[in-house]
Length: 229
Image (cartoon, rainbow, N blue to C red):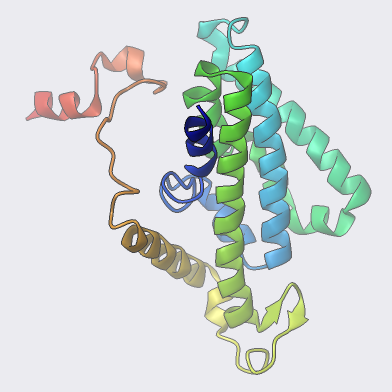
């Protein structure tokens, strides 16, 4: 039992890292990862929303009607995002400003909605909380790792403080969109190398949780491709 709980907690760090393996939350990852402070703030905000929404959805999973589950999930997530936004605006206004519109966009972050649909709606409150913590930490670590590279090498600073030599010789393209995509790709390749490709292997491409599954009529994407062939 303890090993199972630990596995749920740790899988979001590398094996199912939401950013570097599942490739979710790409928009805030690329936009916010130019600053370590902003990246850490975004990671913590998303983690807080993820924990609260996972626990709430798990607790209400037998009450929410199947036909309207996605709108209900979004309403719950939006409520927690609003709460987090209000707290940041009141007590960390500079961070609130640096996150900008991406803080509000946590509502439609695929990581949060995806975990609600694929895990929280099918598991207990405790397991859902562990899953949220693991995924949130994985998201935060990926964001901060990218931000360290882009801010130190691209801007010559770390958390806004100048770094010797790098401050006078910045690689400014790393703070731009092309640099973000290059850093993102290199980190995905690095995780793939460390895990020897095991992290990104997916044996089952089932349609569970896919909003188009009812209209599709197939049991899996593989079956769909075989039918086309």
